[in-house]
Length: 328
Image (cartoon, rainbow, N blue to C red; front, side):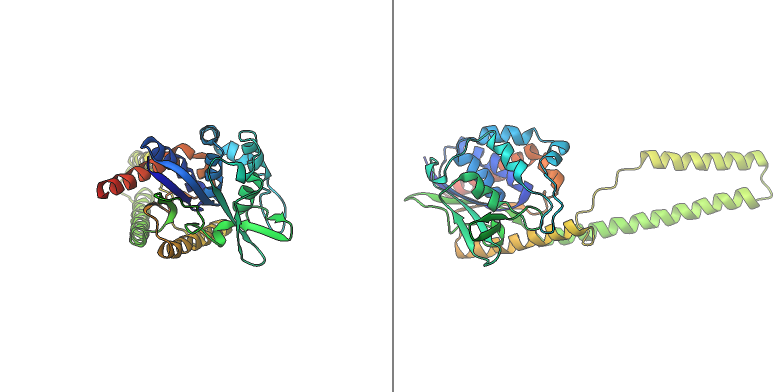
């Protein structure tokens, strides 16, 4: 049985992919002997290390939009929008309190000291406070006070803690990165969206010209009878109604740089995670790297798509393991 030191990056709802990835590893006979994670990686990794991932998976799969909103204990505060207590309380109903040092495999969660910028590594003490600190996305979740420290999301200091996972002789390091950016793909999406916008504008101009022609005929065409004008106006109105009710739903734009405050903040944080991960992988390359596109998921509403994201993670891990085993 091949031993695996597993590293899970930060990445919001994309981190649900780790569930499928872990299941794929185990189904193929790989033994996870240690785990390190940041933010959502610390949460999923911690639940796995505690032996409760199947139960947590069932809970996450049960979430819909309303349930996700119900877990957001909104707070009117100067430094956060969500307290973050309800999420941890929901998990504590599934996973009993446990100390990290008592987990069956070595586990580390990463947080960041807001004041000093230092990386804070949790490898002992209560599991849930460590996870809560690691997932404290700046401006979204309330920072966590621990002694003299104020802790925020570990992705600020170490998005992909390749250098923190415990190693054992003969193991392989498997890293799952959910912050991958395909620059060429993004550029193509931007071009495609610009082309679609131009086509939409041209179609609107053509409809406007056609509407004007019909109105001119109805008002100013002296050769047409009143009944012919009424019929023409009715046919044109019916055509426009048909177009309205049969039109295809506009796809959501992938990139709207001026969409809103939260979109800009979230995108900035994601980009930082991507480049931090790129640097860490150069310093400490894993044996197997699984990449998931940054733009695959990321909205708050995507927390209600756990099953879909999980299956994507399973597929990506399968591809990576197939490639590794062929080469080995």
